[in-house]
Image (cartoon, rainbow, N blue to C red):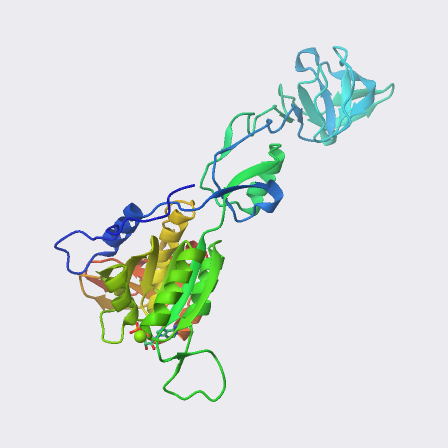
Length: 416
Ligand code: AMP
Ligand code: MG
């Protein structure tokens, strides 16, 4: 069981950096954190979405024995003649032919049947003619060993079939089962607490005055944690009340491995999360050169990391994809993640300053170009639903014209 208590200074950033570039912030997170989860054994069939804690080693080979890839007629290539006598009996999947095939004869064989001793080559039935007197003739050229599968040609017994850190997908369950592995050692899911803060927040209801805001971030962040395969823990909403906030964080430290908070992360007067974390925990404000986003608070509370995300839902979403996703994966034993992007032509124009990375809400047009949401306003939550991904514009200045290649990262590359 790894030690979950983090050193207090783990989120220190390099000195002398004013606006921290995204890559430096990511490298610092990767350096600071590591797996915190315990291990458990599960039957392979129940392990969908779990992360392998150990390399998965094949208990037996796949296929376990040489077999036929098709329905047809088998024999030893060295003894082949123009037409060959057929033995009585056949070889079928799960019902092998017992005994050796006499040299110079052939046998009816079906797909998946173990090759009887004396068979190394199979001719598909469509290329055979059955003759009087129980003989078979081949109509096409025959190559030695054709249409057979070697024992272990896919995976050999003792081979590592899946590496530790792999989050198991449906096809992996097939491989686990095919290799005769009954139970897999996986990591217990990472418990991700989600907490909203701010006096202005209320739960969705009727007759709410316009000066109140519905808590949009909490369902979003809980759903992200779930989509990424973690165990979300709803820590509710806390008003800007230091005492209540402190109690809730203490409770979180017992129930969770990591906490995502949103709102109150900047150094403003009303930012009680920041105030509390800096006076009683350890807090580092990261001024990350990213839009949307910027104030990101990284803290340690009672040994567990707390991510203080921006309150603005668009910024909270983007910062979660960029910073929280790889970090949570690392903590959950799944290793660091880099989203896969694609360079496609822009269907928009934009001139961008140097000094920060920008993420635009985007989707792909029917012509395969990246179009972006009409507004970059970070209050435009609907743009997140309009989009299918993000266009990433690097830290340098850039003048994007229509048709220029831009990096498009589909949401599916972020695991959602
Ligand atoms: P803050 O980061 O606390 O300064 O908040 C920035 C903006 O995000 C403000 O307009 C907040 O009302 C809004 N905000 C904060 N938390 C949430 C939330 N959970 N859901 C929706 N909006 C929020
Ligand atoms: Mg606030």
